[in-house]
Amino acid sequence: MASYDSDSDFEQEYTETSVLLGYASNDPEDDTISRLGGIPEWLNPDKPPSASLARCGACKDLMVLLLQLNGELERFPGHDRRLYVFSCRKQTCRRKQGSVRALRGNRIDKAAAAAAAEAAAKEAEEAQAKKEAEKAKKADGPGLGEALFGTKPLGGPESGANPFATSANPFSTGGNRGVSSNPFATSAATSSPPAAAAAAPSTPAKQAEPARPETTTDAAASLPKTFAETLNLHNTQRPSGPPPPPEPWPESSALPKPYPVSYISDAELEVLDPEPPEIPQNVRMEVDDSSAGDAGAGIDKDTFESSMDAVFQKFADRLAQNPDQVIRYEFGGQPLLYSKDDSVGRVLSAAAGTGRSGMPRCGNCGAGRVFELQLTPQAITELEADELGLDGMDWGTIIVGVCEADCVQRGVEVGEVGYLEEWCGVQWEELATN
Ligand SMILES: [Zn+2]
Ligand SMILES: [Zn+2]
Image 1 (cartoon, protein in one colour):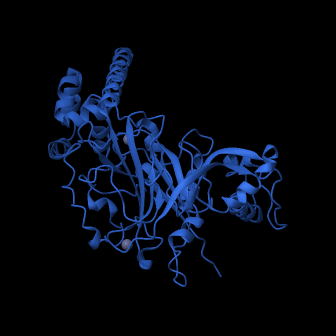
Image 2: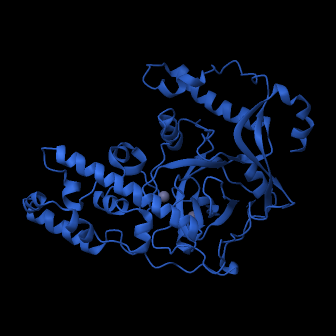
Image 3: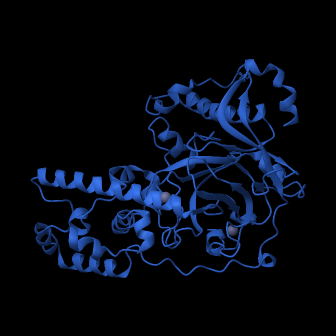
């Protein structure tokens, strides 16, 4: 921060990006909410989330807070909104799925919720009218999903094509099922607008009966009986069924030792040097525009390795220009990838230029997910300021993606706080291979 200020004389020559950089400080100034470390402060202290949301996916122990961010945004008027990133303290859990998790808490005031419900109802009405018009045109019978539920899954073909949605959904806890591989769960979960679902969780029977055209009764009847029976079983048991009972949030004394608090009270738009940084001889520069389409070009091994280096080099250069940044924030923006070669980097870079984020859809409402923020290695330095000499955290960046609609947890009453797990992609430091 200080070093940046001293450069501001040359501002006209510098490039300002749309990424907001957050800096750590001991002084909370006006924002006591946004911070690294400490213990979480919930939107309503009397209604914390289920502790199960803060348990390590690998060892099941409670995790510690890395980041708490005030996420109120003009684009979501009337939404109290907060983000949390947790990490497991255990070294043995490093690099394991679920050892870093992100939560989004929010509360929508009644006026904003009513306006949103009205808009959703109108949209649903229009969609229904359009669907009926299409149905009238169609000579063929409806697809299986339509026959059974009288509706198409919201995700549509897109969610099927998303490799994350079907195979690598990192969230498997209870009601937060995500766009899972179970087509019935997906269809049931996404077919009702969140407001309606919150008011009265509907059963598929209710959805199916009135909407099912007569002809599809025959279609259902002609299914192999065991399949139909199995389906029925699933339907009666749990379409968007009750989530597991929430696990009480423990007393602070029962939590693992928190990291020290440093406030993120200072944020400024990223400013980049006028001159491109010097690129080492052994790294071939990759033109940014080509990066999305270079996969199938039959590049040789050297070029491939250079392009990997170029991604990391770009990451390092961007951070080096504002070395004190602890978070990079841009709702709906692009994450700065640490690597294009790990599982997170591959999926996100493959989505570059497609208009989608590459992240799995929201498991609560079916909307798309967008990038919101990422933590930088400088955050580790802040968090581990008291732990010199220990073998510290070893991620390069933690990328958080959130529901683009900022939906409220299903089943939560209007005006109350809900918590949902969001997508969290950890790019671990590269291990030496020789
Ligand atoms: Zn763990
Ligand atoms: Zn959502």
